[in-house]
Image (tube, rainbow, N blue to C red; front, side):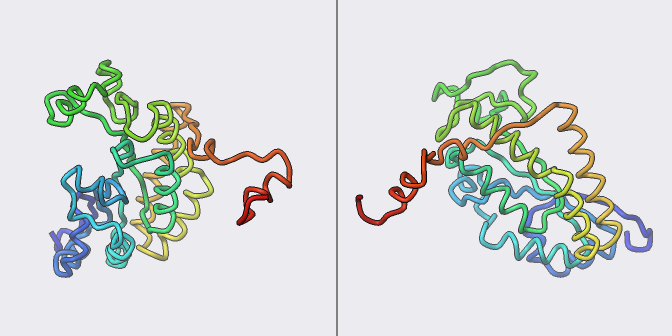
Length: 232
């Protein structure tokens, strides 16, 4: 492909960062973007989805290496796995902000018909919606383990909206120009604006359910009392 001088995108595992020759040849052949299934930053979740070869502690380093080759990364992530609590949305957003990932495709865990996952959730009585129109990875159709269904839906919407805020898109694209080059940065911009447009059309807002769990204090004394190492 190198003599063809084409620019293209593809999909692969994050393990491409471990293969210097393949990574270099991909870039020389015109690859400017890769979709990579990050899935989760929780190792227990990764074991559940048979992706234990994904090692969260190496994500940032490997993404940086892929970027250095001039290739942008669009991450696929899943929320609603059994080890996800309400804090997962803020944790994922923090990770995405520091990782160098250029775009996000977020999926709510969805047990599709005919899959072992579907059989598992049916046996556990955790399917709450069988309207097939909702099986698009953007609707909550299950009863999560560590949060409510509404919290999962709200948190997923909030994460998507927060990630694709216009100020973050602009900053991400500007960084991409210096980090991965002009054409990959253009791809970053176009992906981000396309996702943002879709979210606006859907009217998504969401909320961070973990924020609702923070203690509220009626006055300064209550706050000081909560912070004091001994009982007042």
